[in-house]
Image (cartoon, rainbow, N blue to C red; front, side, top):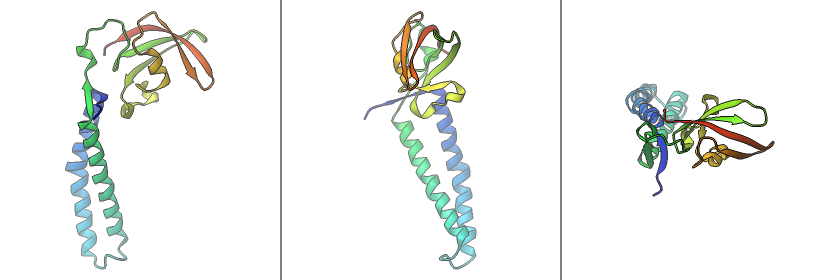
Length: 158
């Protein structure tokens, strides 16, 4: 089984969601099913069917999260010495050589990616172009609108 990289923060968010699903959502859904059963005929009971659907979704999400956590390799980049090299989990400031603007991204696992929060997937084109490069290196990113040239300004282990 191939281990999937995940940051410490991503693992904590998944564990928090798992705890909520098991300790809050699951009991609430079980209670809703019990109340709906008390209303009588289950064939035409919309509340019962809705609660069962919620239960199915909740149990599926629990299994999905448990699987992701079991298959993950949690990497704490703050414990790795900063050599200026781009690796999984680092935060990288890039200087766009075309429009002369800087942008900062953290390289995270696929499930953690959120461009609005400046977190990009390790498998994204820009992250793949940066991997194993050093501060000061220039990279070329193949984007749908054309190639974009960047210089790696800074690599941080935060």
